[in-house]
Image 1: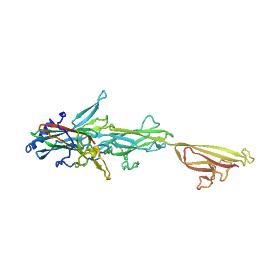
Image 2 (image 1 turned 120 degrees about the horizontal axis):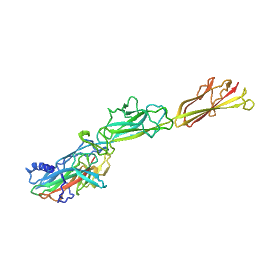
Image 3 (image 1 turned 180 degrees about the vertical axis):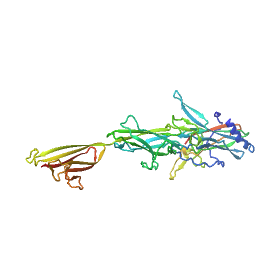
Image 4 (image 1 turned 90 degrees about the vertical axis):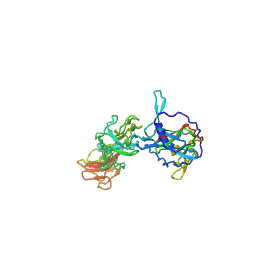
Length: 333
Length: 153
């Protein structure tokens, strides 16, 4: 139907508004959601006119134009990790965290797919699975959060977000500093494609579904970074004979030095350095030092022990970049 | 044809008791912009049945005095549908309500009381009703249009 082009002849000016009994009370417009008016919402427009007919005020209503708001399909996916997720070689079920948001105006099931095999990274995790943060606490809970399956995609309300966890196993062959990229894609179950694509009759409330600006699909990547450390142990000995020289004769004192050098971006737990006392020598009591500090032979608060056949120094957790020097002495029999 | 049908439907019951009749027709168009191959943008008007959030709507109110006498003190009031945020009035002289149709005035003179009790100037998004009052009678047989824009929330 074409617009009527005739210009009305009447000048329009401000004037005190008339009291109109026929005005229906209209509710104040509600605040719009970010996603917009909910799909299926009717928009009805009716105007009212009044005029005077020889002293009688007459009111007339216009016809009512009815429109229905269609469903917009918009999905957003963002990594929710603050940075690379540190993992160790061989670690199982390492967790990457994502946020999936329904930016549309109707409830929409979201299909989730993962790509752990990004070509440009250093390694690929194995056995990657998707879990939904069922209790919505932002933390993966074994036995509580539910495994995602294609048959039961989560349905997100308009403007709603969920947390999605990817669990992957880190290959034991990975080395310190290696990274792996894992991509999560979320797609509106109704469909996706070029913005503006219409899925007739498939919108919420029986209307159409229209692909929004996101294309109704989105992806983002999370990253694993292997944090590992290696320990190099080197041993050296110096000999002091009873005459102030370095000959190995009975009575000479041998000072053994164990240098434990930890390298890498990670740390090593439960490090214990042990060394047996060589034959034909006798341990010099209380001679253990750790980084030039003396340790007692008994098992007590300090890190050193001597059990009669060898020494042990418990270093515990050692971070990469640490060098520990352990010394002890024996006398040649 | 749609206009005529609506027009007749409105007129029929009134004509039995009234000496003059003014019919009011409401139409809503959606303005769709499309970029052409040469880079220009054309705007087409469609009469939709379905819209999506963000659609630009053009409301056209057409009045026609089909009676034998002039209609005086003609006032047209259009409540904004809840899902539509007011955009702009195309025809001058509109006054607005931001309180559900109780007080009307120029938008710049209207104020909104926030929940905190603080008042602020009203915005287009606050408009609940738009109204035009014609200063001159509508002569018999004459017609005119009043137009405004809105956006689907």
